[in-house]
Length: 356
Image (tube, rainbow, N blue to C red):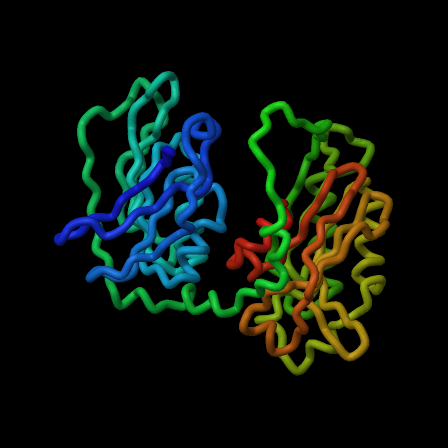
């Protein structure tokens, strides 16, 4: 049996090994799947784990290292961009250092881009080798990149956030297996999407509705103008009240409304006028409970989906009830749409569940 593996050695010799979990398509022709999980090794430097190249395209591999207590993730790779693009996010999401080593040459037409780097537990770039974007600029000489790792930073806010994970929502990740298949396809959809960014007036729904409408009118214009047509408009979290941090926690109930309340009626009018689907957020009131909710409204003004935030921020915990569903919704014009809100991005399991 052959494996794509990486070994850890120390001053006293061999410490341990890791066998790559997620393989690039060409490795499927010669390598067996890694069968060791993601071991974490105790060393004088701290607790070390290893991921290899394609592993980083899947958030789960780094997450396994994190929940096992890793302080540093070593990351050897031969990457043309995909495998290193998410490294700062992996460092931040898991609260550990990442030490990444890449190549910077072209082999059989496949170009590796360099950019070996060291990332802090907050996702800050501590050091990086040159980024080589063109094969003709390949670097043939050795590049060594240095940074200091501070053991005091092993205990940090991002690592402590791991305690807030909700594994009961992630079961689909264990049940989904899909092999590489370049022949698989679905009918493509052309989707033009627009994100709106604005400074909300805290708690003033009318003022924020006016801002939203003016921005959409300015960007899209008349729905009859085909050149400006949009299929999807995405608004910020809690679109018409502003983020809860700007509101008094004791007044949150006064901003609450039903899913079909004032905000949705306003959004339906915009969807119909501009012939576009809209994703927006509101403080949903259901019985005695409040939720941080996002809604997918199709271009006909019909609600295609509703999501109640599952990973509440420390401030939202003071007033909101967490949701307990991760769903994907079908919009005939857009395709399949998942919804996430704000603090959810710190929990990559959520986007993975939506993906599978």
